Image 1 (cartoon, one colour):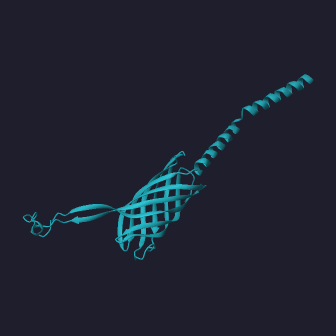
Image 2: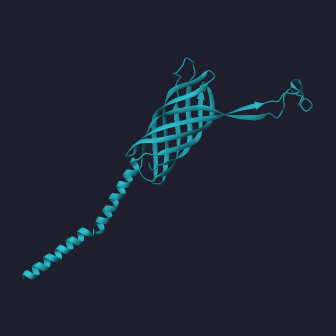
Image 3: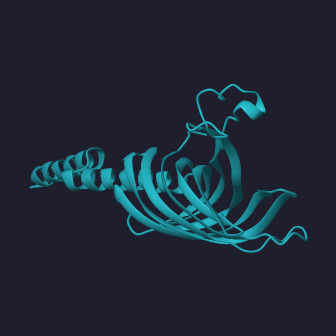
Length: 226
């Protein structure tokens, strides 16, 4: 009887030891899920950078212009679906000028071919000029944590633009919305629309104002291994 009890205890001990060293299938699944959740939390919590480019429209003192924007963004904090970004960007626009060539009374080069004072075929000239510069924080909220993540955001930016007398500046509230698609753990692409409401110039006495800025842009975000 004692031998039977000893053998039984040995079998139970060996089984418990084997279960301790080799987890069951359910425990392996739970372990993998836990490590995956830790990795996802670590990925969502780290900072990233974004490069953005698009087409912008803006109006200054009743004059509407269109240009091209380039932005650089840095995530300074990410909590669950909410993150805080610092955004800095510039807008350049093309200034098209018709260069008309005078005729004989200004040198006679086109005097024999055109009876009018100017050449009929004026050549447009394009000059890429500084339109706007802006910098400020924004809060971004994601509606999902999956691969496709729609989002909205709001913030306030310090904006500067050029005048004949120099530069003007103001503070402008911003709003944007878009969709981000995660390609991998450290790379994503997105497309968005943005609106910036303007205010009168606040840094000098010139009466100039920025009325609005709108843009449609696309970009990429990546998480560098720092």
